[in-house]
Length: 179
Image 1 (cartoon, rainbow, N blue to C red):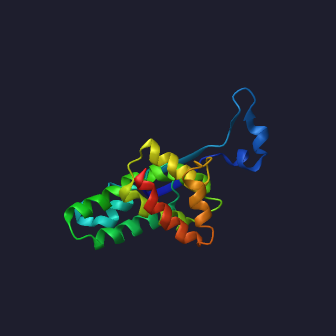
Image 2 (image 1 turned 90 degrees about the vertical axis):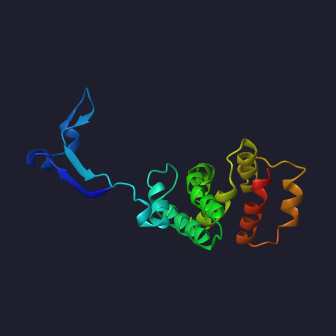
Image 3 (image 1 turned 180 degrees about the vertical axis):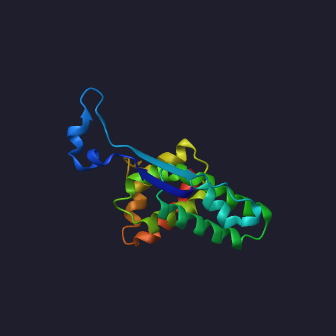
């Protein structure tokens, strides 16, 4: 969006009085009136470059905050730039479309994991993410959001207790695509 403008069209008498006294009791609507005007920005074309295109694809994601969008786009763009073949570049570019699916699961972790760590995790997981039910369940189990399967996650958790949080993230990034 660009040229975002907001207007308060509430009359002065209503602005200066108690807002709750100016409500219609049957409709529960306020007498205040606000109007917003803006222009929807067109999606950038190929001439804008892959980073701008990636950022634009994330504009309307449901579960990502602006910082998440920026960090993920920049991380995936860095991988895109390091890719040698056009197939690899396509895989990284298309990873942008999988981020919202991953953040759908990660959204409950936003109080535990800071945005840069969540973005690191999601951006590195996205290129191999297929959004299968098995992958989604493995991700929930690996993050501790659901009860883990005894035969896999319990021994892995016991073996990795001394790992740093970032190392555990890299381990999950490597393991989840195999489900």
